[in-house]
Image 1 (cartoon, rainbow, N blue to C red):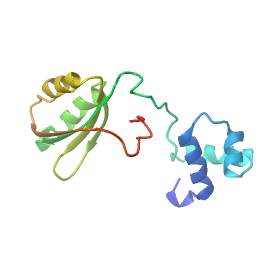
Image 2: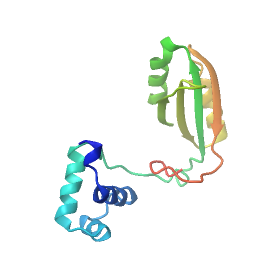
Image 3: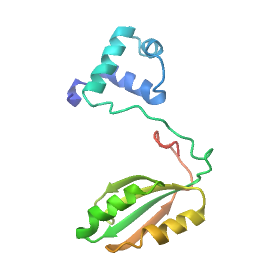
Image 4: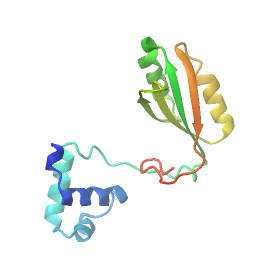
Length: 151
């Protein structure tokens, strides 16, 4: 599906689903002022077109005892980029791994229980050959929360 095919009604449906993907189609139809059949067809079209890739669960990490969120920027040797990114992606506390431009080559987001866990992550997971520098940014608080992690 091309982006140009998305119209205002599609965007209203997408926003309703982002708020609560378990919301009944009947309720979404009322919210977006369309009939149920139209909303159902639009959702199917968005799924088939790959605009909506999947429905997922947003966890409250604070309630799970995970209150430390950090972004770790890495400068790496180009030949080791993929190996390091794949290593980080396998770690259960890693939420995302991005290839970036600018001061860092990779940025990863981790969510942990304690500062000691962050220290252990930095000391154990980042001692890979090819990492030539790190920048660690600890999140103090949100101005707007992430729709996927809730943090």
